[in-house]
Length: 192
Length: 324
Image 1 (tube, each protein chain N blue to C red):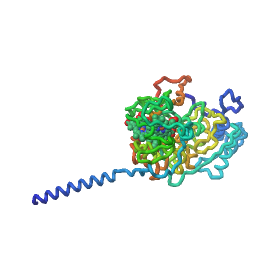
Image 2: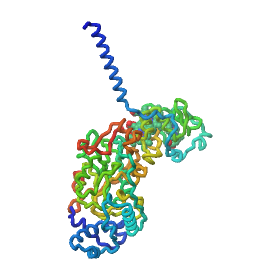
Image 3: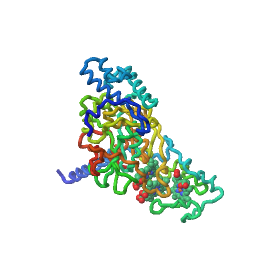
Image 4: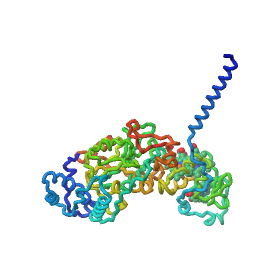
């Protein structure tokens, strides 16, 4: 065997390994649900607008009162709204269209209503949107093999200050009783 | 512990005032069961059918009630007859019109459940929705779902607590609801001495409540603490009764038999979701067909970190936990 041939063999071997690797990676990659942020929805959502007393914003107020886009703490109106979303929250007009605030917009210029707020959130929470689109994140009711109804992100998360969700738990089951009808000691095992 | 004799005591049939019980006793439902057992005993002794029938003191119970066959051996006509009797019993004792159905497995479907541990906040909404849907006894608080509160950073279910109270989630805990795992290799089915429990074609493990002898072997065999024994007469207020009932699922069970989660087969075999899924406020529960490559279940198994509880036991659960 001559040396150059050895080199070539090496090279071929390396190439083979690299190819095998890329092939492996290809196989390993799971088929993910389609990137659906722009697709027409094949599901229904529980509308948010009935939940919001000040909807529609323009008609109710902003036709007469022009919104002020200067970032500041709100003291006159919307005093409930304190933006606590990520380290540097954007101000109102990043999400709301200034001229008619019941419309939301994305940085690519797309506009939509509150019921499609998931498209807004998906700009930054792509993975969560993908899971939501494939029915994995968020509540999806209806049928396991038919039409589904979803909740928009804002049904669970406050878009202005998404904290962590907490609830009062419903009462625990009765502790199992012993022969005298007394509840057993605190450290009883889980099986009844 | 109650003795065996107490559990199978012949019920005293008498009208009790409603306010005293805070609900309504289910004499009829229990009588249906207990008299059948007692009847069998007595047939053995007296070997006289008519003598035994009068000895039970239940003149309104019919031949079909006493002698109806195991679910799998009943003909469609026999089923229809029995369901009509059961419906009528419920009407007599609760004044509620119910419909008892017997939906069959859907061809080619195998059900599976996935629960997102990262989302579950331990609020117990599923537990109560389940009790309501499945007509479980309210006084004894027989809940098919048990939500475990576990210390973060551990997987030790022996140190968990399912009697926690107050606001959830607690910062240093995570929550893991446990119910029947509908194993493909179910130890409870193997343990049953009378074949009163079996796995259906779509993977749902069911119980023939009228065939069950209440020995509780299955309860001991289940590693997921999923099976419950009816210690008492089921107590449900008539207004709380869910009239949409399945013979193998949520019909009102008699005292002295085993019961458990059935993936709400009276709902799911008709395309609906289980009641616990619909009740989950955070959407942690997912249900679907394991054989359908486009189902959420399959997508979860393909793309998420999935955890099989007590995998080492080889029970092959159709209930998965996942993170995401």
